[in-house]
Image (cartoon, rainbow, N blue to C red; front, side):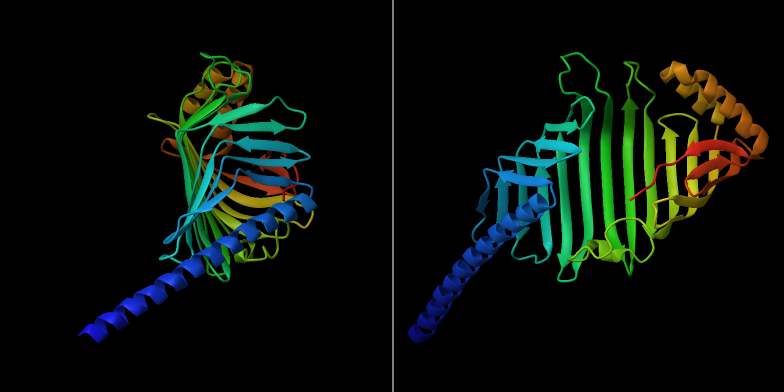
Length: 324
């Protein structure tokens, strides 16, 4: 019996030593990987920096904490509060992260903004062939001018924002939702709306591969399975669905079905929130009722986009800039 106890004790000691050595080796490699990402970003002209980096979590997890995070590119500068990343060793391929606000946003040529939130969390599931799923959740988010004083309404706020990007076979699926979105670009708050979208990019799973094969959207095709904007707590909704394609020059082409539920309610919301657009909103509401197919309170019509030029029937809507 004593011999067995000694053997068990020896196994525990060896296993503990191996775990300790393994953890420190992985922590060292993680630090090198972060250094590599920062160096690669700098080489592309977009500095990314985890300030005050600390790697901890021994023995069951690898955790990284940044006192702040900065990304600086020629066209955009971002600076956030503390950020944390955790990967439990007992669940290989899974990692979670938390980002604290505020996030300072400085687009080149535009006024600086500040974004804040109650909670920003996310997770990544990956394996040797790349990322399988990415999930991001944002609670009680708001965006304001950086120099805004107390009592000034934010430019935009949302109760909940969710985003999920996942590989599905060789395709890439993107699903997102935003609840109770309110805009106040001119100081007048818009009615709250709920947004949701579900789209698939054909053959684009390589975008989440270890080397990001085929980065960008140009030359890709897919479908909007459903995109929806609905007035919160009332009538009025817009839905889009249909296939699309993006040329090598970034020009979008699509054949979409547009469904408008109570278009008068939508026009009324626009008129109330954005008075300069009142006349345009009213005219569009009247026009779509003439050219669309009436199905109860819903009007159905085709929305076509050809090489970036969008139109409802014969009514031109304008040009969409090149993508990707």
